[in-house]
Length: 320
Image (cartoon, rainbow, N blue to C red; front, side, top):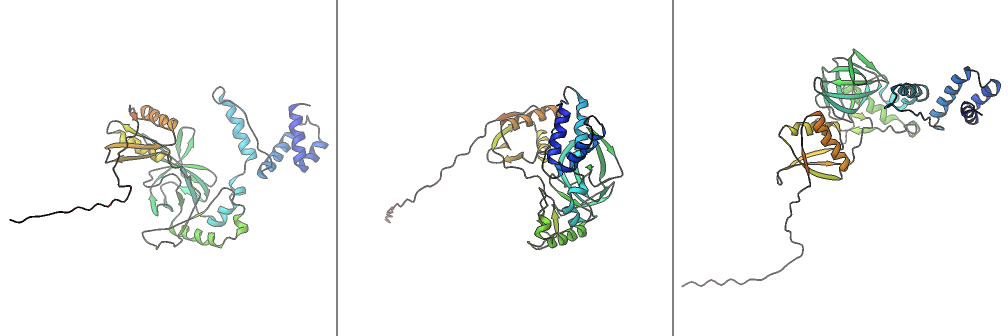
């Protein structure tokens, strides 16, 4: 039995519709390939199989194409898996900023996944996390490391936004404040049966501390990226211009924390380990041309009272 026939045989064991076609069709018939892809798609959406594609982009860039074809053929499109999002936002815009980058010419790049609606060039957006409005931004479509300016990007695509002032990784973008409030109202009307199909999508209520009392629900947040707390700390000795570079890296990488300790007079960075620190140092050298020294963290020791102590002293004063 050839490998092709073995794959078809295993698909037939899992999918009855494909099994009927497989028994009635010759295994050498090319029409069986399309039916096999349809069966793989059904089984993948049902979480019964996991397609695996092997290749080496380093040695042969052509192997990237079959992987992308497999993504299109087997993975769900937004209309098939964003049912819960569609119930909450409807046709209004909902998008999640999942990555922040920097470009020397364009400035900060906000990589955004659009769940519903459409993002238009030079439009305005409401940041539900920051309770702020972003105006007059540019919309690009990424092609590898090239960005192409476009008029709009619709649901299911990735957009790169430039000119954003306060948006960071994990922020939810909607059309306006009213759309956020309407989405919150729809979210509260959902029942447990609707939420059962949420998969890894998680909604969280946002509170505006400036205009609304604490506890009032005014918008819905998409599940962002939860950055773990740093576990490795060290000091950085670098030129003064390295401060801006470190802040940019901290914006791009939420797991990186940068702070200046006034008591120690040192810049302290928190990361996930030594390898993470090496990556940061390499990026400072490669992208910013900065040679920095990474040192061990100094500890400011203090004397404290641990136990209760009682002491009696007599003071005598003589007046002559």
